[in-house]
Image 1: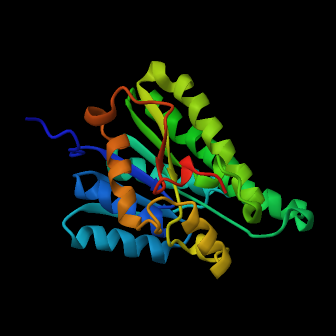
Image 2: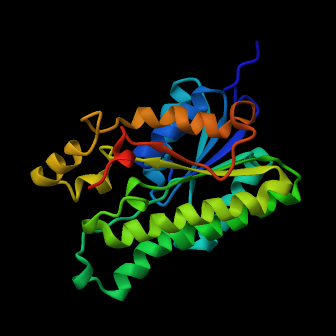
Amino acid sequence: MANLFDLTGKTVVAIGGNSTLGGSMAHGLAEHGAKVAIVGRNMEKAEAVASQIKEAGGEAKAFVGDVSDLSSIEKAADDIEQWSGGWDVLLNAPGKNSSTPFMELEPEEWDDIMDVNLKGLVFTIQLFAKRMIDQGRKGSIINISSVSSTTPLSRVFTYSASKAGVNSVTQYLAKEFAPHGIRVNAIIPGFFPAEQNRKILDEGRINSIMAHTPMERFGEPEELKGAAVYLASDKASGFVTGSLLRVDGGFGGMTI
């Protein structure tokens, strides 16, 4: 029987693959045979993730790129193309957050977060998808959204708005790219112990989140691997596009 989750021969570009959640998904994709390009603005962290993948028997290489500086992303794309010839999967996992209350929000902070979470994601997709189409490569684009995109959280107004935009972009581009055989989906993680979540979690907030999470715990980064592998695999999810896959312990079915 064919292995539905075998990614052997596939190249994955993991934007933000040097982050806690992005790195975990990159590991999962490599564990299933994918060759993974780890792209991040912090080269030291990107190289650490790539080294861990290689130590586990996988194939990976680190590249520097910052989605708020699209020239650096274009340079990364050129370098990855030289390294691997092209790519089959684009994982978009960059993220920037802030707990600034709405009435204290300044335009500069709004622009800073949107430049990474939404604008950077859109133009990264444009760049990488164009090259996939030019090469006639079918494949998968996986965007990382957030539970706050559908259940707005008061302390992360700009972040929530940006991730709601990610959901819309995902569903629009699923239609746009379907004729080219490129599937576009998003993963909606719940609360995971990532750096940006820790900044907004005090005891009262933790208690509130747990009260609205049926599984009554935070997610572990490793629990995002399966969703990423599923959406990356043409065999497992070849007829899945425009979906918003929740990995949130049931939080999305509750209200807060």
